[in-house]
Image (cartoon, rainbow, N blue to C red; front, top):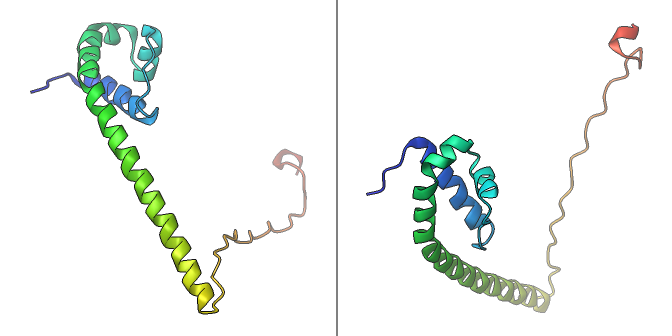
Length: 124
């Protein structure tokens, strides 16, 4: 069972999220950089640094393996999706249909009403 104070848990969480968002690349080695990522005060970091770094060293291999698995599944899904889209477009062309293309159009913004004075509020 893992028991940490709230501050240490927050630092561990922020470092874990950083590790995952950087695609499980190596973490910085400088203590000041790790403390900045964890958003911790020096005293708080010093009190919990050894526990947090020990936990991270235990979980990094597991997270790297999970990241590799996730990447493999994502690439398979992207390949299947692109093949499905190509097959769908081919079928529509064979039937003589024009494939629909989605267009993103920003809504026209309403213009501001004319004000009697284009000056600042202090100039009125």
